[in-house]
Image 1: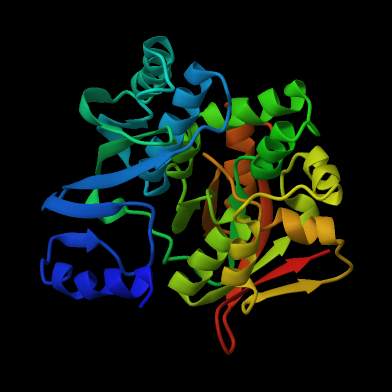
Image 2: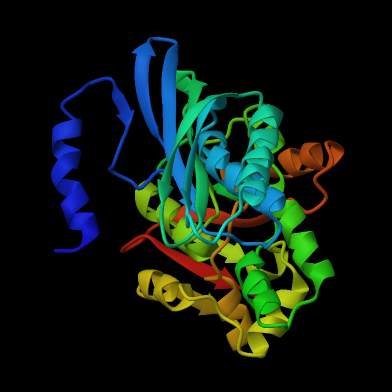
Amino acid sequence: MDLSEIIKEFAGAAKTDPNLLVGFETGDDAGVYRLTDDLALVQTVDYITPVVDDPYLFGQVAAANSISDVYAMGGRPLTAMNLCNFPAKNIDRISLRRILEGGFSKIKEAGATLVGGHTVRDDELKYGLSVTGLINPKRILTNAAARAGDHLVLTKPVGTGVIITGYRRGLADEDLLMRAVNWMAALNRTACETMLEFDSHACTDITGFGLSGHALGMARGSNVRMRIRFNDVPRYDESLDLIGQGVATSVTGSNLEVVQDYLTFSGSFTDEEKGLVVDPQTSGGLLISLPADQAPKLVSRLRERGNQVAAVIGEVVPADRKPGLEYLK
């Protein structure tokens, strides 16, 4: 019995509560629990191992990654709690303080309040947040409501996983790493607030399962097929060079296994391009499904607000025999 089967045992019991609006069923970014007809809680938890050596930047990236799940649902972060595992013998108090300071800076930027936390002595450093947000129950954006005819918008570039790995192997320079870190540390707040100004139907954030894994999750949850134009996907071009040099993360292979039975490539694709679409991301962008005529307007408004990489990357079509994901050239 794998972990997903164990979790499903609890899903049925949880669904007996009529106020649980979003739970286990579709692997969504956060849970949603109704308090009143007009108010619900959004709850999520996430923490990660270091993606950069600088403790302050790591704290910022980890916090932005945790808070993103609330934004992916269309919610507003309200409170946060620190979660930190640290090796007692190998980390100094100054570094730990800087991690927490970095996280706190993003909590404040999100307009949330830090209310506490929990630390555990562990062999490996990990940091993140448990975040509670608020949302209107009538305006929840899950990953299971994309509609045939919608277009897809992506708000951050992909390729961070291979860049982090490449830097650790001495194959990526610090300038490239910092470009990626700046995007990872950027909150999805503006993207969330902007998508709510349109008739957005579904949303997810692109994190550890990569673009393909999260797009497929939306496709399966919505019983549709996603068609993505690879050349329109915002990306770090250097990431393709790194993949060509043999750089891959420890989970790239498992990400491919998850999607391969549902994934097709139409046109001429290199191995590097096929690798990029399963590259795991940290604190990636929002993938938003909305009416076709509104998608370019959403991109234009995001660019007016400082996001110069957001792009319409594809469309949603009927599932035919089964949900799936197709990349086009």
